[in-house]
View 1 (cartoon, rainbow, N blue to C red):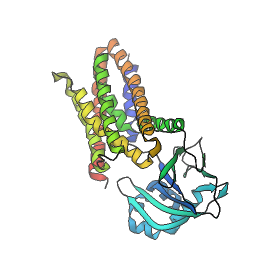
View 2: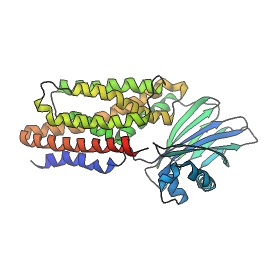
View 3: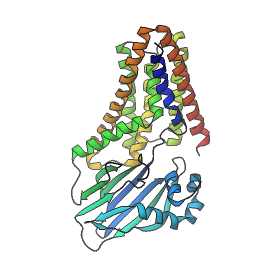
View 4: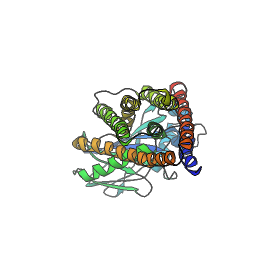
Length: 359
């Protein structure tokens, strides 16, 4: 009988190593703009990856403008060796610009380059990811022709080549596949989102009650995801991320005192905090970018991917909790309390980190 509490508690404890950073998955962004005389591009990399590339022991130095400025030649050389872009199968050499931007909260550095050509190419090739030594690393690639985004893809182990035929668009099915996959991926790399959903499920309830909770969360984050993606309302991550952490604390604490409450407030929590989580989801799309020609498809597909990931979590958690409570109500209560404390501890850690430590 004890194996069920241990299994569920183990699921939450397994997320504990991710407490330090809620989305601690290595990524980079590569934006390529095709012009008549050549290519212009930007590379956004995480300070941790860049530090490894140039042999700097402290990644935090790479969010200091003076340090980056003094090490630009090393940074450019390191990225040039990792940047593999070609036109009609001819390698393009990047010519780096002096400008760069630092995002201290996200701990990223963005750099700019150009590459010239003396002919009119028919296709553009990209190979990656930029940091293949890390098997989890993903490079998000966006290709523009003029002001219009024509293609998006993700370079990762197992998918290391992209070929874009210049003058053509990206099929709707490809857009859907890319953004559904990224929606699912984002849920499963975000232990904060996972803990919030699990926290809402811990107290159990009837099918109708659980359906209302899931629906409230879905509707809420869909609203703010659309608002942020369309640039109607876009609060800064420095504000949103601590509130997401706080939402986890609130849900965990409610589970601990829930038996004393006359009303189940989880539907309210799911909707109110779901609005905040939607802005968190949108931060991914704001960095990845959305193809204007397929904006509706991309937005719908990403949201669908989030829902698929969310339902996987619900379907893995709720039956296990129900089975446990049916076999031993006492054991079910113990697991609910223990897991709720894990949720509170994780949310508290993230809140302190995001509100006071990440600057």
